[in-house]
Length: 290
Image (cartoon, rainbow, N blue to C red; front, side):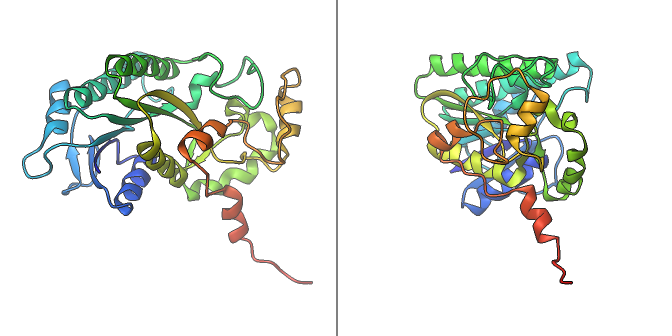
């Protein structure tokens, strides 16, 4: 397919662009930061005219797209004033959705966020593992925008029953070099309780984007996307009992099983995480003999 990726210069975006190209797709990175070249176009996503122009066609670069992957955003709470976060992220997503719809594109995959689940869980989750079945609980302006984007996507797909919009509620995105810090987390279970000790390897983030493009159906669906394990050495059952003692655990947990349920993504998208921080540390450990 011919695919536009917004935010293709970011941590997740770089892996998505690389993965889609490896799969044989034609990919153009629409971003405000990036390496200049034939695969990159500088676009201010807050400007609808620029977005529409870039998606419809650009001189010798392309003559239209089959799908859009929207990853560009201020990526977390606290990186900009709340009003700036709201304006940038909400307006950019509306412009991308609307321009894609005007261009007749029927496949959109975009980055929602685990934050809509109630992060930082200062109020305990309704049950563990959390899933997509309970109402959104945004606790920051950043998260509020992610919730509103999902609501907007529902209406866009209602207007066009042929349109597929897949919202991927990514957990904390990690590159392999980030795994150096993971073993320090075990000192205090509360250090990472804010997202139920979750994470996602950026390479698996790229994998699920490809799966969503392949398997997304007309209409709107949201999926939690995380690694299959937690960031901790302690068992998931121990973590839940220590930090959230009054919360019901609704299934028997494997030792390090993620508490951000990825069952729906496995079932409907064919997603299966391939990378773990534990593999990174085991590969860096050289056995010794007495």
